[in-house]
Length: 138
Length: 138
Length: 138
Length: 138
Image 1 (cartoon, rainbow over the protein chains, first blue to last red):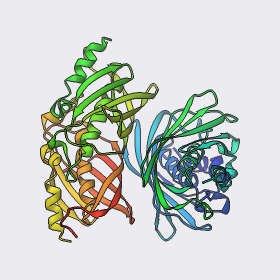
Image 2: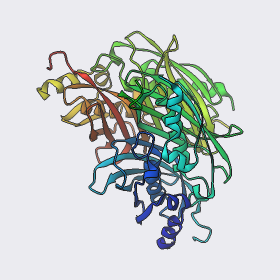
Image 3: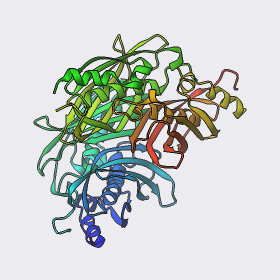
Image 4: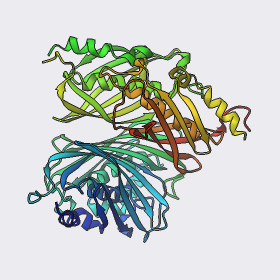
């Protein structure tokens, strides 16, 4: 499997593009993504919407759990919101693999500011299908 | 407290507007929101992005837990993804209150198709602050 | 499959017996279990230990997700603690099936007093193995 | 506050004693506990009951979040089960603090074998009350 093909496939994610999420790194079992919080990403409290922070963490999760070129989908994600950040903040989410089995994988996603302050913490369980991520992959 | 002022405040949520999430109903402890899945809301598997479904459920959660006019924020949300739907599907998310304490509240959010098929199930814990949702609310 | 054989197998759960958990009902996709809180089940705050309440809910989960006679194991469980009860309280936990797929199932477990007051709420994802629960089944 | 008094209070937890859970370490925001899996701790699959593993992780959580001498209770815990171990295995659970606010704290509990193999991973949100853990603690 050519991991660059997988990275390219992940970069073409329509919703991630729509939100302006960038894939910074992706290796087997890990990834790093980033997003700058715009005015349109706030909620009615005036802070970044939970859905924006989740989407960023979920993008990292998806990249990490699909990084082997085997199609994987999220079964369950748990997110804890820790602190709010102002508009214009660049958020980074890193996914790391906690465990990997034949059928499931467990991932931790930490969303932080560029300075490293924790904004949210996520844990996700992925289900690994019996098929390649892309038709052309092996 | 005038619940119509709260509804209007909730309707002005910038990210919910950006995604096209509509507030259909909001009463004390409950809410119902809807969204039509667009092409730009898909992920790289070609199905609705987890972030979109979470955002819809989170919008329902926020409306329900802030419905009393007291500012409430999400501490933790757990989401289980159950089935995927095609582009163009109208998704509905309903929030119901499982329990309400002085400081915390627990909510269930079910995201379904209009036909009632379960797409995702969420549970969220809200923390209730010591201040009104809006400065003008008593 | 003979569901009475499954019920008997579930009733022989060593830890459930050790804690005094009774299986009251078990049908396809659902179950009801009960436990009376003893002095030895308290924590250092003097209220029932989270582990006791979880164990009760988990016993209901295991009964419900194994009720089809196909071996199923918990991947992930989320528990929210709602209220504390005094020693001597009889707690009931009911498991209901939120969704059932070929490989996974989602269950809700509500732990209440006999009067119906909510003590804890749980959601669990089960993974369904490719083998019967007991060697002799099917 | 005398942390040794807190450790002693935590060691007197009735349910932890009943299960044979030992408090190995406890400092501000962290703890380490251990348990040897007995025959009576198995489930009907013949592996350690989810309730036993949760109880161990929850004991670590309770020790860590109450370590400041301020009473703290669990609002929500999420547990992922990763692998099963045989009877006689000594399990260790370590709690570390992910974040600490005035009212809430977030903790990670990893349950492993003594060799360090991951058995379960937990995340818990604690609510910190306005009162000392013990009446005598100021």
